[in-house]
Length: 422
Image (cartoon, rainbow, N blue to C red; front, side, top):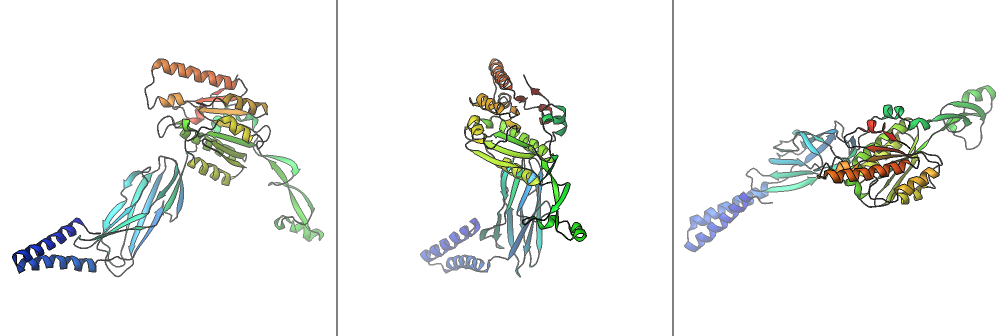
């Protein structure tokens, strides 16, 4: 790619040659030819060096990284010249998503590396928004010594960053409220099955796992014996998160969807640590279902799903509960995280859940108070809307559900203490 300086020199050279030909002035023609020859030589001697660029995230060279919302990421680029020629003027720019905020350093540098030399670019970015993002590719621009030609290319070195929603500590708040008293967590039953504690010995049967053989008993009796474990019974906890378009009310960082993802991540983390089985259901333009499982792997799946949700669609809650009725074990607790706005099926859906024996907990971010963060609502209109919301919550609690009215300025652990029952 020609620079402005090269274009000006070429234009001047051609002009001098034409003017010299018109007035028969060989000196002007020689000057014009000199300009053009100088450009040709510079274009011939310019070239690329063999660059090697590697990126590390928080000190680790990886193609993907997981962080939580609000965390900082330290990015370091190492640029090495592996050729036997100098790079001349070199500009390196690392592409950073606009959702990430630069906190320290800079993501570009101008340099001139000799053979075998290397340098580093180090900067820190903050991830204020959850989601899936990509760092890279690295844009490289070469300029020759006289800044006449530039050549741009991209090094396809990309790093995928997954920003999980924040996980709040809520164990103390839950233990103080009457919400979790119905959950026993993982309890050991005195019946054989998959578990951790020893139950008894029995004879080996075809199909038994090889690692379950008790070799000491085999050495003592001469017969193959296997260990039986006591079965662990866990509670299936279902979390239903509203991701409809109405959940975008408020600011980018403070809206029902963002508050809902924090609540879903925190509640799931709490029950997974108790070795309970957690299922996640999100509904907006469609319903996504993550079957109930236990362990850290399930926690990672829940966080990954929550990082990807977006506010769109208008699916009613009753359509979700009807589709999930056959998958929910009777009596399983159900967390519904929704602003409850713009959905006339909320009451019958919760009534059906309670009628099937489910313990329903409704955690509702107040969209009316979130809307006041971006627009001015007249005092009288606000009071009317607030009264309608209170009546809606009271009607829901009348069906036996535990209702939590979550205000924007209240922490999740404090909101969980404010359970409304009839």
